Image 1: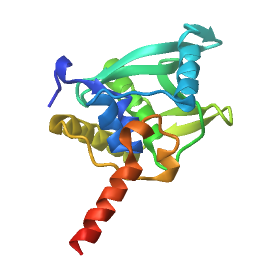
Image 2: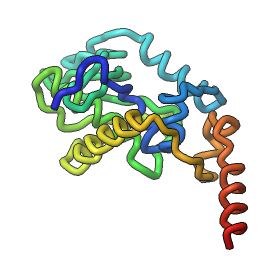
Image 3: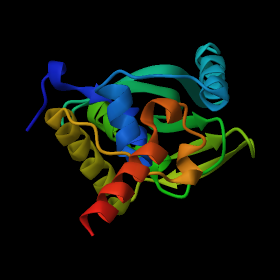
Image 4: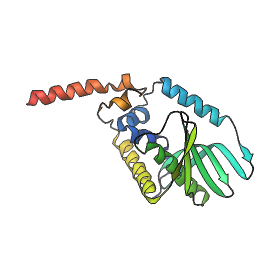
Length: 202
């Protein structure tokens, strides 16, 4: 099955989905957005990368802000950086902070690789994540397990959009306190209501 152009979803939403499904729905279904220090720093970092333009370093051609799409996965978006080592594309996704405890960033850059493979007809075996705090790259190998996880995430994203429903809030201090949507989401209040109802039933 191939998706139509009208059914393509933002590739960046995969990272939001795997980080927090409620955050993903608030941003992409309800169109709720708020900025904090972390998102502002991330936006500035991406703007800096995208404004640098194309360049060639020896045998490596560097393309920035490259448009991507996959009709098979139903995704559309842009890559921060794609290096072309000869004929082999090598996507590099820039992140402001440091690596996360789950694989949401790896899935995002793997989705970029799958788009590139579909668009160019060339294998993309690996890429990288560049984290701003350690200021170094982390190699990401697009092995069968990560590819399967990425395809499953894309299918899950489409199901979320088709449902049109925003999941209930679940408070997770490590995630919630850094989220720019904390005031809109109110995860602590949702937890208080859930506990009240549970105690009332007992």
